[in-house]
Length: 356
Image 1 (cartoon, one colour):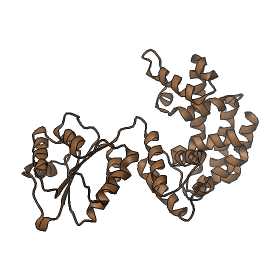
Image 2 (cartoon, helix red, strand yellow; image 1 turned 180 degrees about the vertical axis):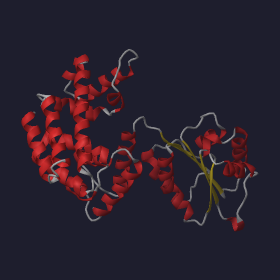
Image 3 (cartoon, one colour; image 1 turned 90 degrees about the vertical axis):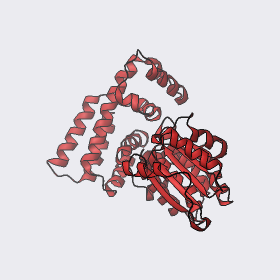
Image 4 (tube, one colour; image 1 turned 90 degrees about the horizontal axis):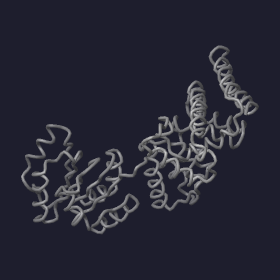
C-alpha cells in the first residue's frame, strides 16, 4: 500500500472491510485530526473482534510499558491485536527496528496504528509502512485546505451535493476548529438525510457559528447584501447565544483591520488594483515570503480570500472616523441606555450604510 491522501482514506476502509488489513498504518499530522480519521479504519478492524491497546509515548509510564514489550505478544485464540501508538515520533530507533523485524515474521494477527505530527522518512517504520503498510499524511499548509478536503470527502461519502457558495458559507461559519467543524458537519448531514442537495437555508437552520468566523461573514453580508441582511444575521447570532458586546467587538476589530489593510495596499498598489482572486493570492504570497517586506501580523496570518473580499469592501468606506463614531454610539446605546440589541444593531447598520 502506498501513500494515501486524506481523500483516499475511503479506499483503506474498503480494503479493511474485505479483510485486507495493513500491518502498519502511519498517520502524520495534527493529533486531533489523525485521531479522528484513524477511527474510520479502526472501527472496521474492531468489528472483527480485535483487541485494542493504546500507548501515549509522551506519558513516561505508558512509554516504559510499550518499550518493555518484546516482539509481538499474541492474544488468546488467535484474535488480532491492534496497537495504537500516539506521539510515535518519540519511539526510539532501536525499538522501531524491533517492531519492523517482528512484523516481517508475523502471522497477520498484529496491526499498528502510529500517530505523529512529524515522522522521519528514514525511520524503519516509515520505510516498512511505505512498502507493506499505509501512510496517510495530513500535512497541508493551511487548516482551511484540510477542512475543505474533509468537507468534500464527507459529502461524497454520504452522497450529498453542496454548491461552492454554500460550501464557503459553511466553512465561514464553522471556523478552523476541527472538532467544531466535524460536529456541525455531522449535524448538517443528518438534518439533510432525506435530500441530496444541501442548501444555504439548510446551513443556516442547523449550523452554530464559531464566534470568530462570524466576523468576516457578518461584514461580508453587510457590504454585499445591505443593512437588512446583516441585521438578520445578527438575529441568528443572538439566537445562538452570541452576546451583543461580542458582535460589536467583532465589527470594531474588522474595521480596524480594514484600516491596516488600506495602509498596506498603499505600499503595494499592484495588489490594490488586482481584480482576479487567483492573481491577487499569488502576488500576496510573494509579498509575504519576501525577506525585505514588513507584513502586518493579521495580513500574514490571514487566508488571502477574506483579504481579497475586504479589499473590495474598502472602496465602499468613505470615512473611517464616521464608522468608528457609529460603533461608539452603538456601544453607548447597549451599555448605558440598555437599548434592545436587535434595534441597536439595526440602527448601527443603517448608519454604517449612510457613512459608506
